[in-house]
Length: 64
Image (cartoon, rainbow, N blue to C red):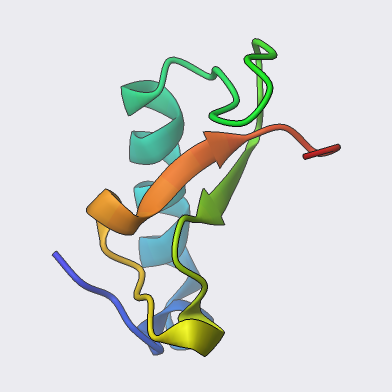
């Protein structure tokens, strides 16, 4: 499921995707392993051709 540039237009949908990614990754940062992480990061940045598909998103902590 890709969301592309719809993220800015539909923040409610983005919040749902963000919640699913955090739940999928059990709140563990993909970079440092910190628990209770609350943000989501793109593996391949949108600026470099990535998209908002769930396979391109990982849970991350604020510091990472």
